[in-house]
Length: 339
Image (tube, rainbow, N blue to C red; front, side, top):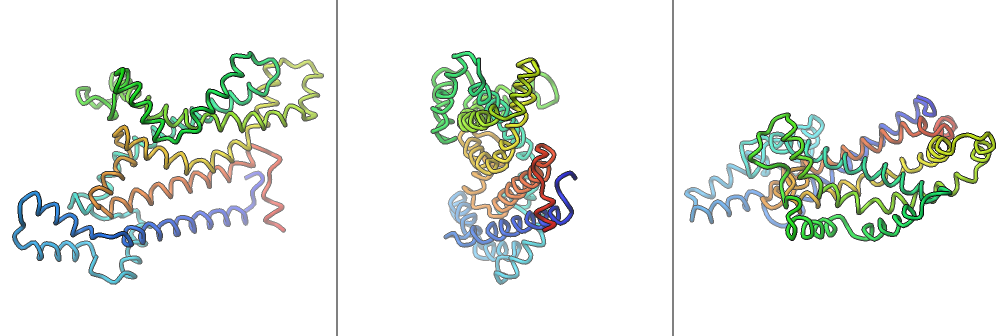
């Protein structure tokens, strides 16, 4: 791969696995440091629902033995790491004997669709707006977009989601308040189902896009200002090339690589914000499922979701870091690793 040698590649892979190991370790310890007992919480709810459980203590001990909670902490930790390597998260505590994968697998697709769509729209829209703001001859109405986008950028995801929910769903009824699709529509690959899914995803995606758009546009504008003064820009203008070609192939193309680095840094923030958005809109993604698992003290599902999110963000950052020299020939990691 251009700009990356084997030593750097192996070090980045090693760093990725180190990050996953640290994330998995915290993922194991934090729920167990929290007050309360998962099995006790489940049996307590069962007792309240049935006004008493016959042989409740025996059931309590059987559950602890089944999930290995009677073993020493280091034994639980080693077993957890070994199972995590195989992506085996065991059974759910609150929905036993359902497997954790059976619970989180349907939510993965919804989260990927929402987050990926929101990030792509925000990235390209922010880059375009920011580039136009710095370009000479841009209409004045376009230059007014940055202050508008920055207004929404000061609001966190969840607060903007609440405002959109109240204004466009609760008050006017333009969009649905919750869910990912109408239950009356058959869940099949058809235009009716796809359009209904897109209709339900508008508000969750819009809250993520509006919260991030201003920062992307502001950053891109600063990069474009520096790029416009470069010698190759002056040479392109002197050759008499079309202004549209100069704008896209000389200015934007050379200003956009640092935005890719920003994208890698912002992924964790976007994912965490999208989790809260899913909770607010009851969108059936990993964030909403995580909220349900926290409510039910389902530690195994919590561990599965958080580890999956950490691995996904870490892997995305790894891929972006490795392909960056392909996007910007000026960047190389060969000299650094060979020295």
